[in-house]
Length: 488
Image 1 (cartoon, rainbow, N blue to C red):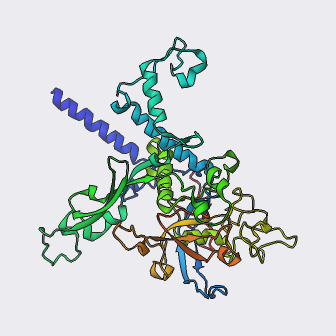
Image 2: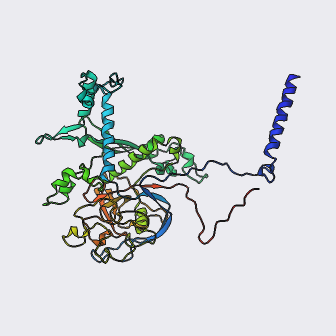
Image 3: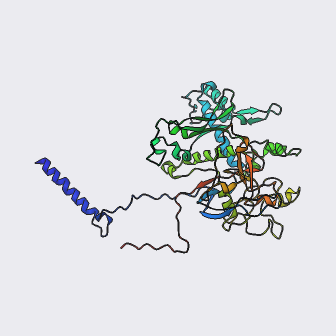
């Protein structure tokens, strides 16, 4: 009787609940219609220092032949989705934060490394006030020196070096190595690399050879006992999802010697020694950073952001270099101008220049600057972006080919090729856009294309980051959105 009574009670509750859910007039639940699974909208916050470039289209390239070099720019109508872009070029100050993070990471690892006298259970001793008992932090308090202090001091000093002549204490640039991993979603999505052999061909009438050996290439890297970075591209049979993970180890310190090597017989020693480290150059664009280092910065910047977002991190796209198409689309502004500004020419009637470039033969200072300038001192284009012409040219993620956009899709066009170490050096060229402080007027036009090898840092090439915006709202041009009727 108890079991029957219990069943009656449960049934009654179920019927009561059902009547509650279906009591609303016009509810789709009455007819059992599919209405979709709801969810909470995620309003992506505006990334710091970035502006939103809304989706759109343009005629990329130029149909005109360059009058100086007789070179024509490949031209094609393309469309790109919305993305966030740094309003200014990455500065020395921003990039130094990356270098110092790598430095501090090395020190933290060595604090627990027995080779430096460390221990995994290492803990800095504290005095009665809770202050760390560390001589280099508390030297004026005359706190007794302990073995823990010696270990910590040894770990810290290990990332510095001393100039043999001047005795100057400097960061050891050769040790500033950053290791990161990237999962190749695009390669993993290709049908020919599916782990399940039955999914590699859409024609189900074809008998699948489950014993077929699928080879896949991936990048890996390691550091030998001498501290030398070795990068390899290995090809092996596909076995698991881990075969789509590429590992990179990049020395991230900029090539400060580029100022001397780029300009022979020029007095640029001051820039070589001080441009990256002196506070007076904090807001100047970082240079001497090659394409591989720029990608490493994008990865670090992403991880740095995601650590503070919690569960929302899964909705955030990664920082990356812009594609060649994205860069030109953003540089041309909302009206698709040949140069980032709306006015004709490169200077106003008063002789004020709109960008930092080389206005005349041998006269670098006519625009007010000799080399680079502080970012953002010239007016922004209609997208709110600064220095999209001149100051420093900028890396893109796109491989450089003469065909350019003609070899790409017309939707979000790009061309990616991760050149292996054994590939011809010519395959390691990447597209560079925007011209620089050393270039003439024709080189700073939005359509102008140039290139550089991915492992070379120059005194006139920098970069800025982008981030794809997810789920942008679409609308039909010329049609007003209908107002939703209010429920009574």
